Image (cartoon, rainbow, N blue to C red; front, side, top):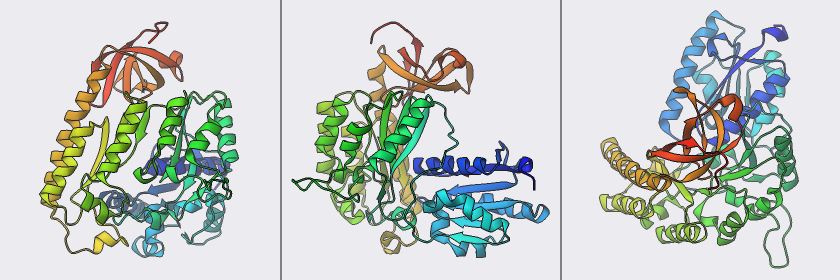
Length: 451
């Protein structure tokens, strides 16, 4: 196959970490001479970057693989790669289930994609799921946006939540050095990126695996220190970070976010359950009272901050009264956005083996009730924007209205307003909000008016 014939397509499932990994792997493929194909059917290398956090995400992967495996019988030159968390979890078992696969690789091996593909092109079927030290990220990602970018700061997770498969598939925590992170951000600033989201599966754990401590015994490198260190990178005008863990979310971090003007007033802090007994069974390491204190502290420093979170309903043994404690927490706090899911047993996790599993009917009913409350509270939270002037970073054209552009407020609300994407892409525009919905806003540009 000539270089000109090399076309690839990547399908990404799951979280922001997976999206960032996909961008890095796309960068590797383009360094190898591959060109992006919008349609998977026109590509001769297909990469599925998979997620195993929920059962339905895994089923989607197998549905895609079944179709492409049949295609490979007609097109033997087709290369099929499964990367990410399902690949790490299943390993060689994936080859037995889908023998047409060429490469199965866990998330820790994203930077090794070129080497692994060379082994494939030499005629080998390759499985790369062994635990490795992640080499410094020297790849140049093919980023999906020209305005916003992900920057990984820590890989893996050392937590042992009883429902979660992530530590098994993404390995132990490995922090990048502050210098490497700042260097990547400086390059993004030079390329014109206006917003950077610092990423980690458990980002508040950043730095605790790096050597060095102060006389007080505090690690020299924390997420708070990192924010101060990278804050003044030229060109980057907004900084976000995700995902936080309540166990490590400190007042010092909150204070830094208030002091640093580029850090957006948006915090994603999953609580998972509003009941202490369920939180203990989940091995989350905090109580609902502590979670409420964290949110109170955030709002003391930044009263208008947006709070988003994750919640699970139907965890093994959850009673109706315990579920109602989750509803009460959601009612009391009023989240701007809440990602909800019914509990899904995952392989090699303790909770999957417990006998007190709830029926699908109960889980579905509770999820529906929680989602109704989430929508109601988000709509209430949206009303505070009505008539206000918000700074919106323009990212793209509204796909449903070519006369509108869309972007996000500092609080991460998706906002639409009339304008030309050619003129406004990458600009921070002052927008007066004229319509509010539970999860998005509409407004009119009012450049030159001070908020």
